[in-house]
Length: 392
Image (cartoon, rainbow, N blue to C red; front, top):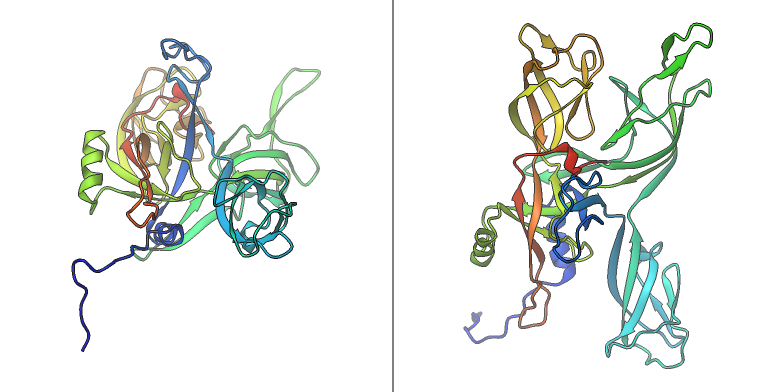
């Protein structure tokens, strides 16, 4: 007959990296991660930003994409002083190799899956720690863009797909970093005005007649071909505000946070970073006053889509009267638009966006197992375009 464990029986917790990161993959959400860096305008002694700084908008931080990722694994050495790492690390560059005593092997060189320690001082079968660097930016050399209307063109094939959050199937778009060139079927080159996730906004060319000085719009002929597209795929983090343990709840309340984010060991999420959850949207309504410019700003962080815009006398049509550009801007593209100073109503869907307010220290259990890396995040409730948090 089987016998149960007593309260003093030894129990080993399985909190290693593999189990923990598998948990994130099963229960995480796709997020757009923007890293925060201190703006050069911040005064060293007072740590106060310049309120008139054009780069950060007086916020004190500038934001960008995480373009590299530091990874760590272990490997055993053979009798020739060669380490073999997993195929997953074949294309990653070597940062350093060190042994259990902390000694760094500065002459080590990596060749695909294999690392040569380049030394005679090693013990066959002993473990070594291998630190690697992975480039996160990917490149598509050549592709035909998909016309989405309103001068928006989609880069195909750069969406992440998942099927295991409560049975809901959804896609999460990547962030385009740059496109080297865009040409139509006749070889005419067109400029990309701005990027929006996996979309490129490419307006028609303005051509001026040399004799009359009249300007005309020239649209692409046939398909547009883009070359050397660089992009960043979304990350998988777990953002939770329910069913938390007592310690996480206490730390979240102390930091006035709204949720706890759990992320892989290879991601260095830090305070003031911005996380946009791409798993679902929230519908909001706002009143906006028309400016004198062709752009109006929606008071939210990252807009997924505009549902409806209604003026005093008429409703405006998406792709005909306006388009959604950047992260939260309306660009008016026709003469059918509200007058300057006139208010109008807008209904839109927004991606929930959080800022990191505190990192939770990464502790270890009594069995020297690493606990998950976590941080406290706070939901952003308003947004100023001049602060550049989500500029792409």
